[in-house]
Amino acid sequence: MRFAHQQNIDTRLFITPEHVFLVDLWWRLGYGELWSDFHRRLVAVNIAVASEMGAKPFPIVGFNHARGVVDEPIRTSRRPGQSLFADGTHFTPGLGQRIMDGVWTDGDGLGFNLQADSVESYLSAIEQLRQEFEAANAKLTASLRHQISPD
Image (tube, rainbow, N blue to C red):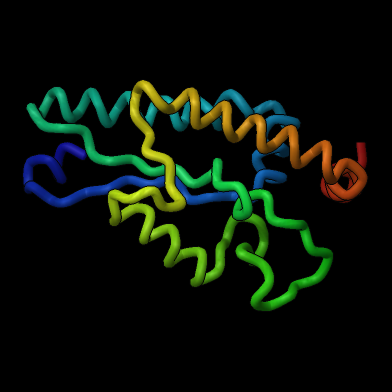
């Protein structure tokens, strides 16, 4: 970040989306707070470095709150053209373009602008989406979790 500020590089940071089922796994494996703290710390470091450099913080855009994207149905087989994700973390070129549009435009696109006063709202929106997805897909997600870790 310092280098980008020093060189006046138009920099935008973003957190790529992952399927909400994978976010749920982070929590169930005991790493949910680490996952959330990553978002908080990225915002904090961005602000601290900007202050140190006498500049404005870089925009940070998150995508893990995006309804209709990160909560798309889990398909039991690959269906080209229907899924936004190839495997939960790797997204299709079409979704990649929507992400870039959200990063490089200032409109009300797919992304959520993360700042000190908005990161908790973002994380709360993700948590709500996670709970809703789990409730709506309890049987499937339990089966998938069992396949991942039979314990």
